[in-house]
Structures are given as structure tokens and as C-alpha cells.
Image (tube, rainbow, N blue to C red):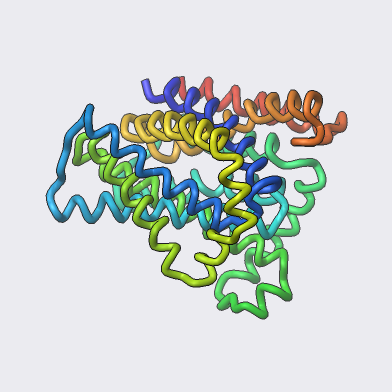
Length: 320
């Protein structure tokens, strides 16, 4: 039951991700501002109380709100990684490590254990997702990243250090983003195990709303968010932004429901399916609207992505 729900959620997410990329690069130009706009509209989920009125105990309320706050931090880390580095380098790293971190955290805190076939499917889906999302030149780049990883751990990454080592900064930002997302998914799984799904979901969204308001407490963030030019651009793009956020809410509810029903690591490993949908969306947009989104596809890159699609198909077959 969870598998088709997750696949449909990732189908919608592929379109949302493409729109987010457009807004970040063409309209907002700020990871903090965009995370604020995404978080602030989470208040709209309160309308769902009409269908699922639910008030948790104080202990669970704090956990629900903390989960929503954690998701907003994950968004900030994700948009920061995208803002400081090329998306084609960030996406494969984050996409690969979210299911790995989810698997480890779920095993430690939830006691979730995968069968051998599910474990094989997990790594096949991760590998397929990397091949699909990374361009050929990024494969060699990721080898370079792997060589840096061993040297990176154990050091305190300060401001000067990060500026002098952009590759290591990319790795740090991407791994931090992946870990926070994984921590959120595991925590939300724990929430859904002990509370009604829709009711607890609403409270977690209110946590994201509170986190967005919290960004205004930082003067530098407040200046970015309310900068006149950026605010005017946001107002002009409001109808399209709200439409995208509506689709994002549907995808997010479906993805959370899939996590509530299934294994956290496996649901996250299915991001490879999202990359398959992304290929078709980007190919269509780059042909029809080259000024909005352009993606170059050589024969070698197409072959690499085709192999990735086959691996994702094998991973899905192993889960059936």
C-alpha cells in the first residue's frame, strides 16, 4: 500500500522541485527568504482541523512542533546547499545520504530492520538515483568528494576553513542537509506510530510555521526576507507560488502517509523514482521553454541516466 502512495508523491514532488528551482534562480534568489515563504504558508494546513480535530497532550505537542521545526531547518540547510553549490552536485549527495542516514537512525531509535532483499533494494535505488541525478562530469567530482570525506571528519569546520575548501564546504552542507532531513523523517515516523496521522501532521506543520516566524528574530534574515525588491517579486509571483505550494502540500501529506505505513529508509530511497520523473519534466521544459530551464543532455549522459532508470526499476521490482 505504501509503495504506490510514495511513487505518486514523488511524481508530484518532481514538478514541485522544478518549480522551486525556478523560483530560487529566477525570482527569490535567497535560500532563507524562500524557506521563510514555504514555512509561513504551512499555516494553511490548520484548515485540515475541520476534518481531523485533534489536540495532543503537552508532551506530544512539543514533539509535534519540534518535528515541524526540524523540517524547516532541513529546508534552510537544503536551500543553503543549493545556493552555495551547483544543484547537479548537491542533489546526488543529499539524495544518496538521506536514505542511508534514515536507515541508521530508524534502526537505532525505532528498531526497524530490513530483510536482505529490502536492503539490496535500498542500495540499488540509491545507486540508480545517483546515476540519474548526476551528470557525467559530476561522477568524477563525487570521486573527488569521497577522497575528501576521510580528511573532513574530525575537523571543526570554521568560516575561514570553509571558504578555503569549497569542495569540503559542499560536502558539509550536503551532509548536514541530508542528516536533518533523515532525522525529521525518523521523528515523524515515531510521531505517526503513537498519534492519529492527520491530526499530528497538522501540528507538525504549525511547528514549521512557528519556525518560519522564528527566522524573523535574526536581523540579517529579516532584512533578506523583507527586502523591497525581493518582496515585490514575491507578490507578483504569488498566484503561481500558491499553486505550487498546494501541490507541495498534497505531495507532502502522501509522502508522510507512506512513511507512516512503510519503512522510513525505503520510502526515502524511492527518491530515485522522483529523478526519473524529473528527467522527463526537465527535458520537456528545456525544449519548450529554454529561457526558463535549460538542461543539456549528451548521449553519454542519456546512457548514464538510462542505466540509472533500469536500476531504479530493479529496485522497485525487489520491493514488490
